[in-house]
Image (cartoon, rainbow, N blue to C red; front, side, top):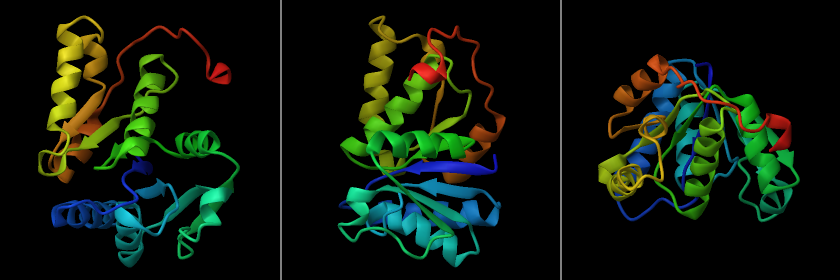
Length: 193
């Protein structure tokens, strides 16, 4: 992996460990020469990841829709800041630029981005590793829901295993480096997304 897309909150959350782990992730990716692709904001966990990576010599590319840039949340100290027209274009550009995806704690936007990438993987549109950094058990309930989806016949076990989950950054990065995507039939092609 040379480039990783980071999905995470534009808030810092209610526990200091969230921002602490965002900073550690940014630092570790910079130290491993893994470029970060993210939403381009200077606020919340998003800004913390970017700032930590930059402080440790990392390369960070932000992708932000113009309407958010105009609200003065765009990070102006990045390696590169790409301005796009829509949220969908933002996700597509982040997907195109990356070799893997990591989701940290966040809200609706983080979950929407994560699940779109998982859906695309399930449909065979990409074979990139998708990691969930389960900081302080933040995603335990989500993981239980996913397991219930498997148990109730709405999600295949092989597709559940496409989501790599760990509360430890080093472990998650190792899982992502070793990841081999399952063989799935392409129901649709990328140009139809």
